[in-house]
Image (tube, rainbow, N blue to C red; front, side, top):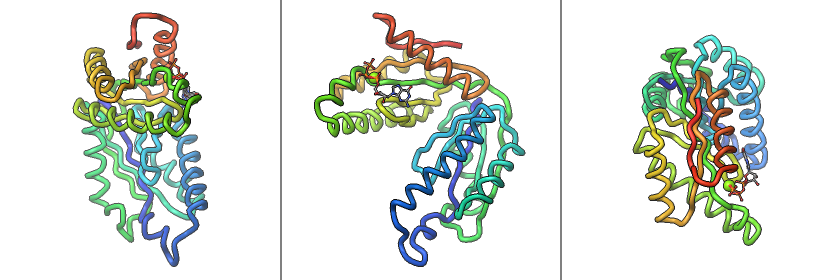
Length: 244
Ligand SMILES: Nc1nc2c(ncn2[C@@H]2O[C@H](COP(=O)(O)OP(=O)(O)OP(=O)(O)O)[C@@H](O)[C@H]2O)c(=O)[nH]1
Ligand SMILES: [Mg+2]
């Protein structure tokens, strides 16, 4: 089971334009500051937060209880001019967990509900195993050193293809910077990744390697995934290595 937490800014759209549209640079700073604070607090609980849309974030929070979430909400909401609500749910796949979490949060009011403020819905199991894949594009530096915008465009295209393919297997995938992606991917096998990577490679000419870790928390799963990815880099044959 994976436990996912949806973190959503409360009524953020209307706030950004009231009384007049706020300066975009200040909104960017605010979003980065909220993300940084949240990541710091989730990290203390061995969880990992994904930036996603910035106004909506997802954390993989196996091992965290309802009270842990409430403390983070209180801390963030007493620090910033906008508040966040959270909804945690567990399921066999990451896709299903976020779907349940979304539905539960909307029961408290949707993203533009004027009265929802610092709500918490918690239906996590506080146990289970997390699988995280650290996925990396092969030889992006060739593009980076040739035409930096072309390299960025390749990475965006790769993200779009990974998103489309992984969701068919119930997995999510998030861009982490550079040419790195992390996929909460319980239930996706080595063959599953191999098939997805070769299909994408045929379609857009981008090839991937991946380290995949499983553990009781996000932090430990990602650490194992990154060690496995390093092993892929050192070796010559295997493009995907699993570790637990
Ligand atoms: N967030 C994050 N960024 C990374 C990490 N490792 C590398 N990067 C970034 O990703 C860029 C590309 O790194 P690499 O994947 O090593 O470069 P490459 O040319 O694709 O080389 P190969 O993947 O070995 O073929 C780096 O310049 C960094 O900016 C990581 O673990 N996490
Ligand atoms: Mg790379």
